[in-house]
Amino acid sequence: MSFLRTTMTAYRSRLYLNYWDILALLLVLAVIFLFAWNARQMATPYQLGEAIPISLSPKVLPFYAARTVVRMLFALCISLLFTFIFGTWAAKSRRAEKIIIPMIDVLQSVPILGFLSVAITAFIGLFRGSMLGPECAAIFAIFTSQAWNMALGFYQTVRSVPSEVQEAGRMFHLSSWQRFWRIDVPFSMPSLLWNTMASMSAGWFFVVVSEAITVSDQEILLPGIGSYVAVAIRAADMRAIIYAILTMFIVILAYDQLLFRPLVAWAEKFKAEQQGVDKPLESWVINLFRRTRLVRRFGNGITQLFNAFVNIKLFRQSPERIEKIKAVRDERAINLLWTVFIIVLAVAAIVFLADFIIRNLTVSEVIHVFLLGIVTACRVFVLLAICSLIWVPIGIWIGLRPQVANIAQPVAQILAAFPANFFYPFIVMFIVYHHLSPNIWLTPLMILGAQWYIVFNVIAGASTIPKDLLQVADNLNVVGWLRWARFLLPYVFPYYITGAITAAGGAWNASIVAEVASWGDQTLVATGLGAYITQYTAAGNFAHIALGIGMMCVFVLLINRLIWRPLYAYAVNRFME
Image (cartoon, rainbow, N blue to C red; front, side):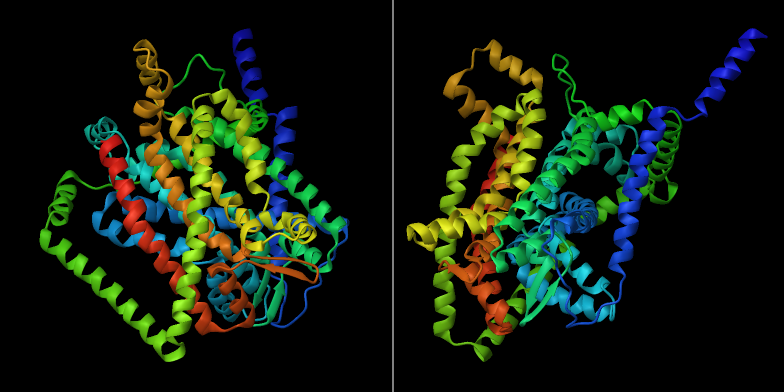
């Protein structure tokens, strides 16, 4: 009887809240309240042309920070959905790969102002009389600065799933849907997290542009840190800039501790090999939820729902059906027709663009923009070479040491997340005071945000190096330059190429922000394609905007086709197969 009473008492104690449950529930309710409050603010009435006042008082900065963070998280969720759909599709289907990867190449080269020029009109027309129009346009603009890197990184890691792991999935008769959730996503999780952090940083870089929208002489200021900084720069208010930098520092620390650090610690279990000699990564958020009672029971229920979602019969295919699909996929005629369709589509787009340019622009203008593109391309290559020489060795060193990565990750996240726009006042004053050339001293701003793609991809690649290979290299006494040239650099080379492709695209995109810097009534302009697009976007000249964006796409596509894609194919064939 006493045993039964003890058992019942222990069971009932599981149903009661403990102190950790209360703390965890308060944290969850705070997050829910943050999203609910922002959703209500997004649905307020708004008419085009209506002025939205932005206060420079530090008292409103917490509210502005909350609005910006929610926009960033919404865009990140959409980017993750895009990554899972199109990254997987490109990795699993050669026909889809032929169109998705070139499209991502084009889209990541389109400046954010190009997306905003179209998106703001479309969303305002879709949500007439509501703030949802500008809000959705801002979220879409942030999405375009995050999604391409995540999709390319996920595509690369899904393609590199070891053959023995794929064979195990076939032995267990896993469907494509189950293989995606049980093999592809877990294997890609460490790399995906690092790329997500880099994409979050890219979103912060363009937050000023996305929240302070100026298209066709029409300015729309959305409440947020980006618009706060834009107004502070225009008013030459250095105190407001310092307040914004301090707020950014607090915000980045908060979402690092509440979001990314728990995810990085959780993703350790998905690594191919557990490094038993190292202390496991920890997060106070994970420890908090592990000490709860009711919240853990609720989490177990969510796990069961997820397992049911993964094993749903609707997405399961019989072996006969899979063989039929494979038979269809192997037909050369369909592949040929698909290739012809892509070529026709590309030729039609080129003809349409050429006809538009001939009817609205002169040949001399096209040549001028082409020369501006060469200038910007030279800046991108020089900056990329310098960053590679600096960050590849450092990234490998960090990735091989999980405890160092645990410390370096939040530091890199903080440094990466600070938008270059916040430092414009200091740079402009420095250039003006010392009478320096904007063509040289504005150039580093292009790579301040893009360099982190290389850093995070190299760290992610180095962190996946199997421990047994490191032990073999140690036993064979492979040290010094031989260890780097024959082992470490070749292993991370595919990851570096993925990061370099995205970093180059990010640098091209950042040129629209970096080649034009303002402080008060002083504006510095560097010669380049980014400055050309920025100036004509502010003027609302669509023909010149289209020419600038089209020329940037042509440059990026040619560089990707002639340089980056051959290097990536070499990396995959040489070091991953």
